Image (cartoon, rainbow over all chains, first blue to last red; front, top):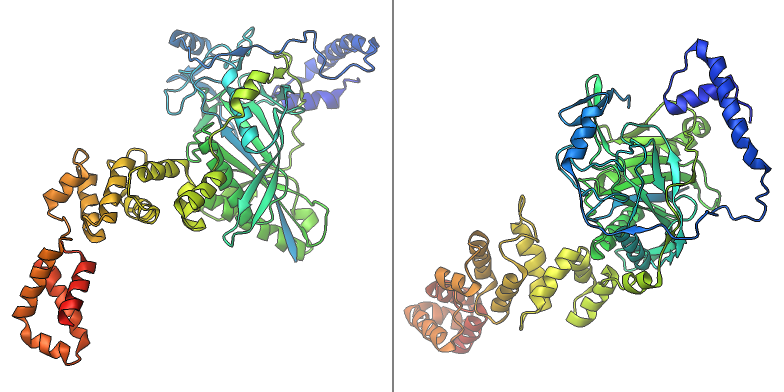
Length: 96
Length: 476
């Protein structure tokens, strides 16, 4: 897969991230390298392997529907959030 | 002539005690962010563990919709970036949902019906809530990770009326099998409508427009009607191709119009892929055995009411439209000597009229047993219907008082003792000999006068039917 400036712009839009002009070349290079690395997987012949194939044939474990919540945990998390007030996480205004 | 084509997507919040993938309590109106944990806040390293009850409730819905329950289904990851989803993806079931190929019957007033196909119902996680406040947005993630079933119909609906019938039936089924509260105002039953039009006879599907999150049946009906007019007008004006594009629109309740939610933006790219943090979801034989046994559904209950209580179709469908009302009615009928006809009137007319504000059928000071007993007292002629209204008013105000005590206190016991009524009739006849002469001479209108006088003498407690019969006999 070719990573070019158009794809980078699209990724910026999807991820809500802004890549500055002087970093673009470098990021494109790094992304190409990562995608190229993952491309190695394509060497594997997956003909006849079901798309839902998983390493384990076990079903996902199920949990009892019993509430359990430690109030200290969310306080701790809110404390470490970049911005919080009145127990809300605060983010820049979302344009609707 | 145009044909309207509608498909509906309904998000139902399941009434489990905990979230879909973690043990945080599901809640409405709790303090912001108190019901969160590393899993639903998507902290690195936290892994989802599926709630057993969600699988059970999905099987129940699948059974109610006469659908295929997939013994193996899979979760998929839908990527999108928005602050109400801390993981920046939603876990859902795109490729193999737990429930597929169901159907739901809608009934028209004229007694005919139509089967609407249900494409699928899949499990997914709800997002949190954003509160917009000036330059910032406040994020509350209590709802993040709440289990949803998204129930998707085929585009089989042909009018706003059909859409509403479908939604009401689906709503009623969810309440009957008790898998969710299905409260539209609180957002536990959320409806997205897909609408398109086509020339009658055309089999092709044209551009569909999605109208999102409308929170009442009334507004859903209106939203469909105005959107259909918009599309028809564009077609007739020759501007259909430019004006009608596949997009999401919002219904403006004040202006009574739909409008585009966002400008022309490149189509969202959700980059779906199989969820790597979860293995396949398996429905075991034991689960099938246990959770395909569901409570009686509205249609079955209606038919049973018709045959068991001799009710007409209309009354039966009114009573069974809500599970709370149906259960209330059955408790009333459990009292000996209660007729279905009187019980229906007293439940749907008299009690309903007295339920105001926060008082509803579930917390009414007059419960089903008590109303049943009051109806019994009407049916056995202890009190008249008119007197019963007074008794009911009194009971609504005085929860601890029994029906019979209220009748005694108010002195409303109906006199059915014919001896007492005969004595009263004799008294009135003797006191009004002149009128008796006139009546006998042919002035039949005067009969009403005598009935009125006797009723007055009895302070309204005489059984009017008995008074009529006795007077007729005495006046010849």
